Length: 114
Image (cartoon, rainbow, N blue to C red; front, side, top):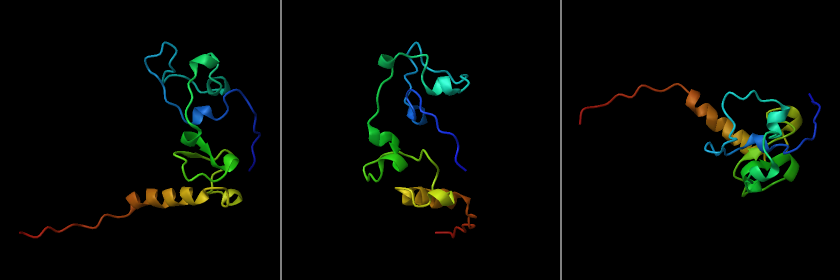
């Protein structure tokens, strides 16, 4: 199950990005995502802004944080048995259950005359 995990410049930054589309070096939809893309190799460090950590919270690396806005599991999702007990897994399971609600059959609604 485990894959080789390589450290590189700006690791995990590409998992959540806000892009200034007006910037002359803004990434375009046609970009083929490679390791070089994930490293933001076409930008200088000064051209890369920062987001507060809670907006890309690495739950399995940083631990519990009820103020986290977006959760990211870097080692494996809680849906895999090996990661069921990873920090903040209960949020993943809650969202999974919520996502399935839209797949339930819709009961026919009968409108009665008022």
